[in-house]
Image (cartoon, rainbow, N blue to C red; front, side):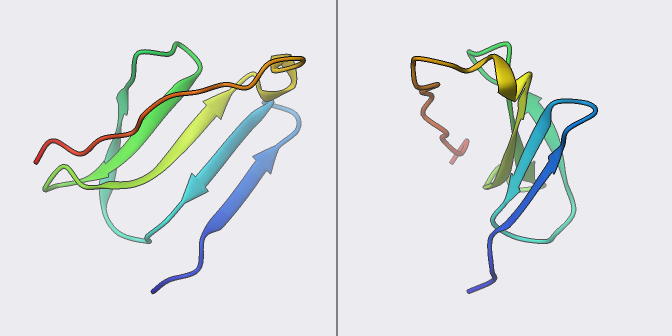
Length: 68
């Protein structure tokens, strides 16, 4: 199992969490702030959150699901 990679860009207020290091692409979710990264088979390999500092006082919840 690979290590989870977490990267935060304070200038862009952007958080990225990757479960696997492989080729893939980001796709939209039901939240405007969250994008999920999937591999070419549709398996979720990570996610990103925009405007992280705006999340105060309430959790940001979303189910990530593969297309299988």
